[in-house]
Image (cartoon, rainbow, N blue to C red; front, side, top):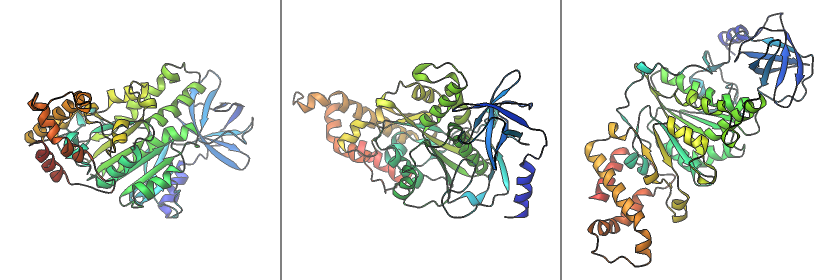
Length: 432
């Protein structure tokens, strides 16, 4: 390990003789006394020969509550609590590219240690509102249905809303492989451990070029799952500061909110809709607003997946996410049943910046496609039962003539990536 890295690690280590004492322990939290602390400070709990990291999450008159980053098994009343010198920082650097790491940038891919010289705070305020750059350049993702009909811009924040088993992971892989971003940061938060190697092997083809994957699986503590998302965003901000256009992909916001639900309920917060405490909803903009385009730097274009239970878009997390994001991509189980992959429901989806990044003729073609698709959807039953007579409605006749071409436009192989110019050309051809 380079001497510079060793010095920085020692600098961040608590060497103070002052310590607090653990007074009580429950399943999710530790009560301690004897230190003057503030909310969000990092502490180290010394139990036997082990040192375990925790965070101060609640303050009382004579005591404070620590939420551990691991589990409480093995801890005892009377254990020492040391106050760390600095807040939670993570090491960052170009050596993260091509690696799979935990929220503290420890490698979990078996490829050896990662030597990093710079540090980035996990928690920080979003960029200044007046320093945000205007989103006026398109951001190609290599997927026809998105590039053509839901065009994204550099620095945009979008949500991918889907039920279980609809094809969310496959679309994520297509976006990571096909996007024009120079750096890609993928946060897998709260997912099953089995899905991590599967996502890398099947959806990314074991190609982690210019990609960092930050993992906090469902068996990790709630605090690890919560800060795993912020940690991944800090990595993206590091590369943005160096002038890169970064693709940030997070799966999933729902698991992230569930982690905060566990923490909030353990601290005594009142549950609201579906058991989510208020802090679960206030946490979402703190993460999502950190993406964007900053003047004089690069950009972070972010895709956040949201798992909607029973395909219900009125779920509190889905509803709150839609209000924060600059667009939403809805995946339809109906399209999956029809064999249309990726199953993007164009009529239920929207990109709020498409009008600023697409050319007038591209916008006109996309609008025409939507109109034809809406006509087909509206009259689908009449056509199926043979109640519609050709010639009755010229617009519907035109839609029926183009139906096969439109469905072919929406279909795309998971391994296929199409350039933005080719997508726009195909779209104009379909509706002409």
